Image 1 (cartoon, rainbow, N blue to C red):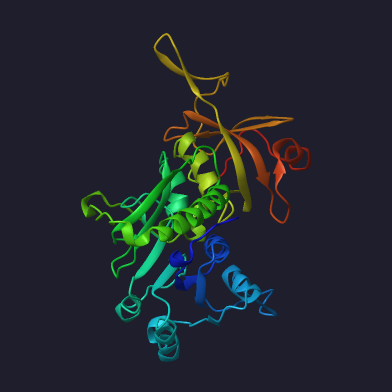
Image 2 (cartoon, rainbow, N blue to C red):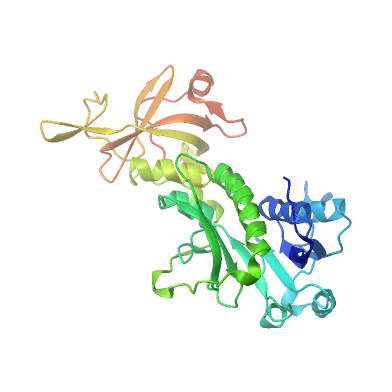
Length: 337
């Protein structure tokens, strides 16, 4: 991470962010020579049953670089935080927001001369909202990307200063987030270097799509969905919340699938290596078990097949399917629900 910056390009910045995705941008801003006047991040979280306070990745970077920090619980209701922001923006001409986790009131958005800029993990106006990385995988977006936009009160609706494509193919959400964090940080620095010369492009609201907050229950697998959709779901929810289904009141987590592709023969759609004689199967039913293979029926009528490559039993670590089948009793005809 090396940058060469002309002195006149150095900006005084208020930075708002919380997770590692945001910390990557903060590191790049510091390395590029910009001056971070103040960091705003979410309050410390309690872990291990409340015995230990854990700092956000952004707070860790700020502490390492001796940058002042504030952590308001609700920024719009915190008069002290608002005043500290006002003081910081007496010198800081721009604000940067990357996955902060709170909406900013108009009072804050209007403080810096150059406004607030946001790093958003989609090609706007597609996938406005809280889960663009996971949604790009779920919806099979090819490609997705990063947008640097002006922050406005309406969700992810501001003019776009710059954007760049990022390949989605075959990646989990964790892998895609790591790639996009680096790409987004680099694009942010590049955009700031020529900020005053860029004419931001107004988004077309009629093309906008939206994505919501992911909940744990979203990871439950409905095997009546198609094999391709289930495979994308598994990648989209890795690492959290994971994808899961149950047999006999035991919940198993699925970490990797392989879709058994369709082939055509005499104009009849059949499955590759599909030698299953019993066509009266239902979605979620196990149709094949061997020493190194576990195949589940899926699709509305159970007409598709998906092979499990990595699985996790309750209270156990994730395993490849061969190791899993060696230590767990799973048999043909059992059904995941």
